[in-house]
Each structure stands twice: as structure tokens, then as C-alpha cells.
Image (cartoon, rainbow, N blue to C red; front, side, top):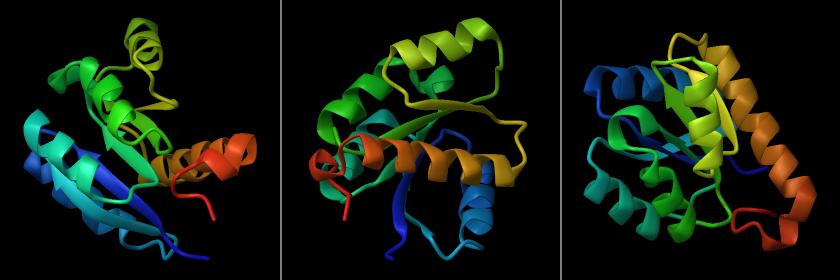
Length: 133
């Protein structure tokens, strides 16, 4: 089985580096790109063959979810937010995120969410999922 290809869209460079470092510990996950600005994120999303996009909609605006979803309709989108209120969660999901994880998470929780969300999308329609095999 090939590794799931991830794009991280996050404005804080230290968090991006930490996520890349921790996610590299799992053989079934590969961070293939990261961006801190919307324009860069959209360019990468259009270029890379992605399975999962982890994005902070809080600082980049919830519309970033809709925009990356339009570029990569088959990828699962996981909102990663500093805030964990029900309103933040609902806003991210309403914008098109498949899942929501607060930033104070334990990395294992993010990995579990990536696998569960991607697996659910694949079971629902793997033939239409761009990254499905």
C-alpha cells in the first residue's frame, strides 16, 4: 500500500515543521508539501496528487477549504484549528472540511483522524476518489 500524500496549509512555520517531523514517523503518511499563504497553498494543491489536505481555516479563512476542495475534489480535508468551540467546528465542516482537529491534539489523534476520514471517503466512493487505489 502506498503512503497517503498530505499537504499541510498552516501559517505557523514552527507548527508545520513539527507536523512534518511527527508525521514522518508513520510509513503510511507522506507530507509532500506545505504552505503558509493561501496563494502558495492553492498552487500546490493544483500541482500535487493529494489524498489529504490538513488546513488551518481559522487564520486563512474558512473559504480556503472550499477553494482547495474545488482544486482537489477527491482529497479529504481536515481542519486544524487553535480553537475548539462548537461554532469553529461547525464553521469548518460547513465550509467543506471532512473532519476537525484542534491544535492542542496529540499527534496520534491527527494520524487517527487522517486514516479514518480517508478510509471513510474511499469506502464511500473509491472509484471517484482521486487518490484511491
